[in-house]
Image (cartoon, rainbow, N blue to C red; front, top):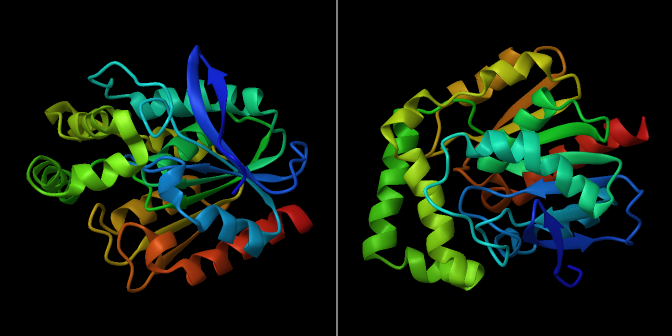
Length: 261
């Protein structure tokens, strides 16, 4: 991975990293992290993605995460809408990227779908989601409540602090507080699915502890003909870590068909 750098978006300094030849005009995979993620928490997957696809990879930490600027808590319940509709286009502007496929995990996948359906940015040529949510479910709330207990009483905070540093409380409570807000049960982004016109590849672990198979089926049915999906066996909420070889194979095929055809 190239040395971590920063861009400024909407007055906030965001941590970024780039894997590849540095040609910002070249086709580039833009990685959108999960609700507790950041640049560092992708670990070696961006490098593997670059090697498997032969494409450049750009990743960034959203405000409140990693080494990016903090945010004021509590986060608004439409924080993912804000990231997809308002922030992400400005990130592409600041990074100088003009030809991208969005690859998002969990919250990042939801943000990618909102962007694709709500912005119709001509720079975005396709979307890959891993464990994305399009509505809330009791199983998700249950797992997020368990994460709250682990953060307060176990070693989850210590582990996250290695990546988020002084942002660790900002990152955790911004995510946890929004998802556990009773009003968040009404959160839903399905309205954006029918207006997505770029190809979409949706992946979900068969044993995903944060969402049922209804999530993947909703994405495929909501988008229609332009979407393909796959359940990954022996896989929970992080397909790129639980089954990296499977993910790299299907993503590489998707990228090749889109950019090489």
